[in-house]
Image (cartoon, rainbow, N blue to C red; front, side, top):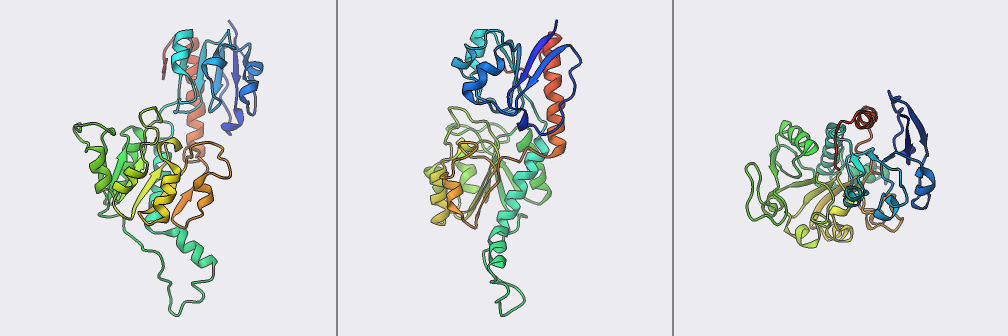
Length: 316
């Protein structure tokens, strides 16, 4: 049997996708707006989506749909409960980018501990050229060795980051879930992790429970001058509260690869801030060539497993 496969946002994965080993009628679209989904995928047995939202209402317009193959790890753009009710299987990609996302988080952390953006700005402004000595002393510079890193999320990425941090002599804490009254073995309570950390790095999914898990109360509970890293999901942090904490000196810096809405509007608080201790990158922590090729291979493997009647990386 030939299956109809539609990739809704092909341009979100700029590497070759391996050829399927079973008969398929394959179509791909560079991108798909919400109002185009039904038109693009009305005949689809299998839909591939990286970030195109698949809501309950949209699923009702796709009567032939049997599988949603998410071309990413995050699945908050797919209504899983509606898929369960309609008998639509869902799978995602796992652990393809553990190392590369951890590297990105570590790079943000190191750049902010050394205040590289502030010094780059000073050099560009000619301040070093005007110095009366060989160097320019500006923003404070801190060592990673001996600093404490609190990681929220103990999956593959968080574990990789912990290994990198320990190699640099950092103390690593894994935070328990926010609101938990007791910490599991190998973790500390969420509030304790925030209070002890020189750097907090987020590596957990975005759910109803984790949305805005870091807002003004949590930012005020962090050590003055601490750094916040987010390479997970933008909705984990209240962005206006974060900018305020940076402007008023509560935080020493923030490095974000994700924002609450993507692509972000021009008036997003983090884009408007233009602060020397804030780094924003355009959701590319996952996007090394090596990681994207692993993702593409796993994407095809997930679809082929479904075609064989096997469950692989299934969410539903």
